[in-house]
Image (cartoon, rainbow, N blue to C red; front, side, top):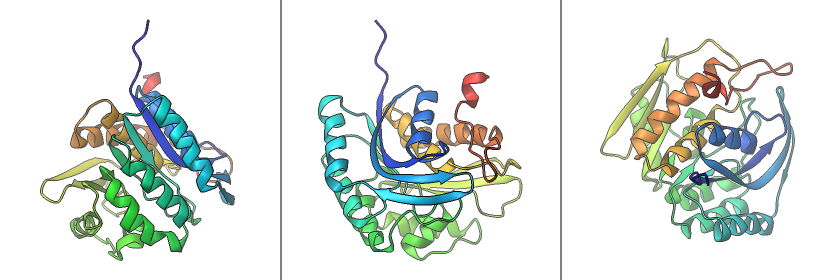
Length: 266
């Protein structure tokens, strides 16, 4: 009889092109040795060129999916992604507050192509209801600005950005600096307000980076589910995503996805 792997639940939207969202989350979880489960919050019509339509599920449907999984199967970590609307954000925040497991919040605001994935009216719910449930929040620089008003233009600004996000209540924040013009390195800052971990990795000349945020957050959740401390889980996740970016491939006519299975083929 095989040993049951750790259990990770993703609460996010679907990407019909397979590069981000629920699809990316489950691929990353499989690659990192955990059993992925899903609560679908929205369906998107999406391809390599952008998001062509979004249909949110009802709060009742989201709650029913979540309870069906957690009450029967259980969970060792939860990752949230696209939540779209204030009612969905508040529903998920309520469910997370009643779940005894680490939570990774990826505060998804826009797609890789610049398409909005979170209603402006939902921002206050993310700040006051969702972020306080997070063991780790993983905003990129655009999401930091959207949530806090802080603009990061240089590496030293990342500390101010992290402090602004931590003020909303997550235990740790990972400010992703991949869009900063920092030369040959991609720099992220992980901090809980007292300890800082600056994470650096080679910057790969590859435009096919669709799904990086979803993949990183899912990889962090996988590490936490396996019992790693937050800094170790984040370091492992960054190494995994760096390899996935390096192996990213063209798909369609636009931005292709990272390769979630790269480490399995080494």
